Length: 258
Image (cartoon, rainbow, N blue to C red; front, side):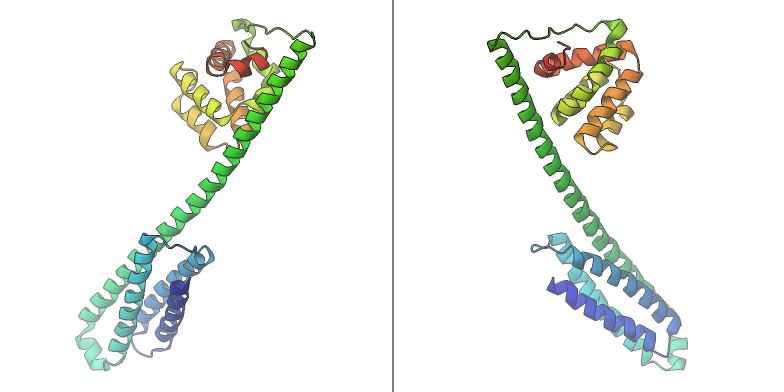
């Protein structure tokens, strides 16, 4: 991005100026530190620059250009002032530099926020792509299962009847179908099960959020969910099986839980 390259050149020039002035070294040294921090932020933005610059970022870069120009003029202004003049105007000089530091800090915060928003957007985009791919794969697996099931019926091959889940062995049934559930449970189904299990008071809000937030991949979320419910015992497992039958009867039948 041309704007960022220009600002990096200006930042380099201003930083060198702050380090070479012979007078007012304390304030100029602090200013050099602020400029160096902003230069690092600009370099990070340059590495992630896109063809289309968000309006908030464009506004922040424009403000930074103005601020760099004002800072350079401020350094030159007090470097031209004699020693007696600097003593006489010490209060005004300190206020001007402090105001400049605050402006630079505000702009750095704005640019850093833009960078964080962009990074979150990239991560979410990747996660959405992964979720869509997993959903397509899940849909394909379901279709294959239905075709195989139908083919077995046509050929007269007996199909294993579904075994109803009893409260006393529901956790064992979940354990038996754990691998298949992890492979086949889609992300939308997992979210529906979470809502239902919260309504049934099987999971609390913190546990439900842990399934979605701490486990990034769909399979990990499914594994985490079924394990949490199994550990809560037979009644909790029975409620999950009932929810599964209600939310996805086809999958429940495939797992032998219909």
